[in-house]
Amino acid sequence: MAAPLNFNSPKNLLVFEQSSFSNEKSRHKTVIGDHYFNCAVEVCSPNVAQIPTTVTASLSPSSYYIVRNLPLSRLIDKEFIEAFVRNGAFYAVSLNTRIDVANSVAVLPTGKLVLSVDKDMYETLGLEGRRSIFSQTRERKFVIEVELTKPSFTPGKKNYERTKWCFSERLNLRFDFVFTWVPHDKSICSSSVGKYFSGMGLSVSSCRAQMMSNTMKDVCVPDLLALNILENSQDLFEWLGAVSCYIDSEEEASNDFVSMYTTPSPCNICTQLTHAKWQGFFTPEAIAMVIDEIRLYLKTPDHPPWASVTVHGYADSPVSWRGKEHGYHQGGENIYTYIVFPNDNYWLYMAVGSHDVCP
Amino acid sequence: MYERRVITKSEFHYMRVSLDVQNPAKALPVELTNVYFKQAVTAALTRLFGDIGGAMVAVDVLKYNEGDRSAILRVHSHNLVKLWSALTLTDRYMSRKCAFRVHQVSPYLMGLAVNSREYEHT
Image (cartoon, rainbow over all chains, first blue to last red; front, top):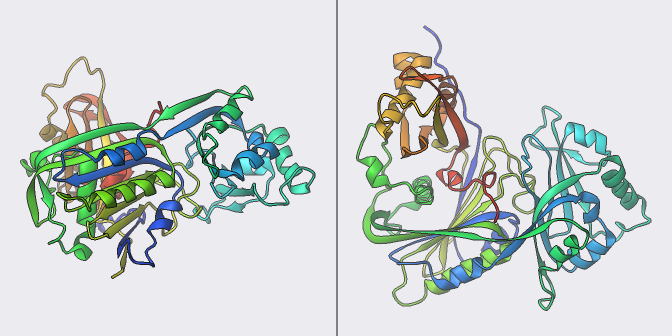
């Protein structure tokens, strides 16, 4: 008899944390602040007719920009570094670049330019980097990091001139970028970067976050206070995913042949469950504001028993948390979810795929 | 109170798939409801792994959209490779040429809620 076929799926990491915002050792500020490139935010709460306007107000107006065909050499111009990288948090990630098959670039708010390049590009470019931690057995991907704000990274210095020459003469690298800028000086308009790039004759377009909202009536919602979360953390995260994917568990569960999925028990019938999703480009500052607004909202009279905030990172960003390397294997998920309670306690999920470091 | 747990193995994997049928104008003999879609997935598994091998792979159709024949499937992580290969090798359903397209795969259902690769910035 033939041996049974066993195929392992790639490893993945789901981190669950339980803590409180009032706990002085709580890491919530770093978890939000060190996750730079966010493409979607979701808010979900039971027993509310609509998402509070304060939350909507902190996400909807956030505008960001797309610049087409930006030469990389422009990002290391001394004028640009002095005006924008040093004087604010500049977030930029290349657009329509698939990190698993092509090259991807990002500028972190810490002033670091990160390139994730394939072997051919690495060898042609001639800049010093290191092998990707996710392709140790085969030399496939390489990571190059350029510290833009280092005092020695200045015209006239060898490293600067070499980098400039590689980006402009060796290979005239151009990428489409989605970017935003948060200036340290609040009196300066954040659209200055867009004007700076369009002044060079580049095509810059302004974009706004798109919102989708959905309220479900009479749905089965897990009773989080009665749930043994440490044993059922995966089930609850799956249920939140089902809400985000607009899966109607009642309808699908009506036929056992089609699906055996059920809502985690114990659960109660809630008159309404509201879910809203924003897609675009969000800075960690905007997300921290959403969490703060949710915390305030949960302290108002007639507050819901909990609210969840889920943040999705860009699948093709070369970094995820704290500038740590990120890749795309079967998927490029780097997601975190906060479930916030009125007493300031929170449950946090951080989910990454196989090409990511444990957050 | 602070508690941290790291789960290294997801119990399930999730796939966003769709079924492309050649010449959609010439409709299939039946309306492809979620029951028929599930049957197409089961038929793909049985064809590759046999009656018993196919039946051992439990697949749930969590969501199905009849308009574009797209679905979200859930499968036990140890069966992901079997399901994926069975879907890839399918070329026919009800004697019509067809192909399963796999759009997204994730160990988390939440991972399928957003796809930054397909999002159009406006």
